[in-house]
Length: 254
Picture 1 (spheres, rainbow, N blue to C red):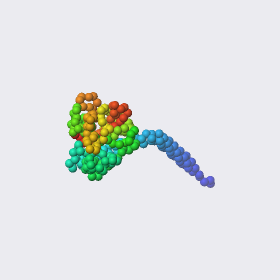
Picture 2 (cartoon, rainbow, N blue to C red):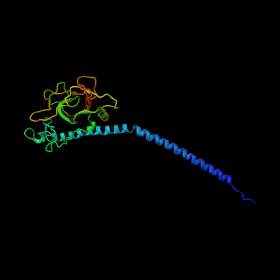
Picture 3 (cartoon, helix red, strand yellow):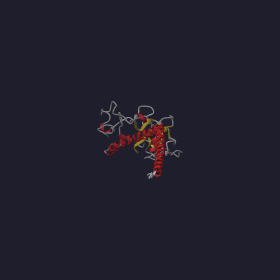
Picture 4 (spheres, helix red, strand yellow):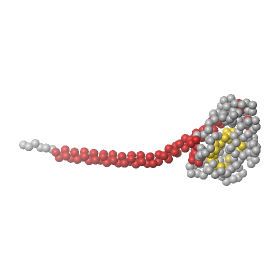
């Protein structure tokens, strides 16, 4: 008697295994194609994403620095230094350690005064110029402190300015501060603001409405654009110098 060989089931089993392997191969191919597409898209957009992330970090640092200086100023005012006596002389100035004009206790960037650290801005946020901050009491913010059509040296706010920042950083700052809802929003334009004269005594009252006060950030007197009204910090384009973008941060509201 010949033995009975049950090869029908085995053959069917092998065909099913081959089908399963083929199915798994097809899945693997599909996953590999999806992964390749994702990697390709990532490599294409990676430069833009990295740039956006860098702008976000730089704009955050830009906002944080004057906030730290403001903390030192507040401590000085609490200790009895009048806002009109604050001196923002740079440590690099020749008279920084000379007490013949102003005592150290009035100097914001001196260990014997405010103890704040002076640092120029990150070059990555600057479009042109030295990246030096300017601190003065020449201007006012509409709806911050006292706002008058004709301000005096006791009414102008003490403000930190960083002129000549890049347009991309200016837009990012305004989005981060809630002034703009998206990057493509128009940048507010301001004219007549003095952001060039640093507030130093040096024997006088330089930087406190010397030769007349500057202008108003925001719209006082019924204008149309109220974007910066009541905004203690933000970025604007100089209306008298197109393409010049300036970050401002109020240190003392008056």
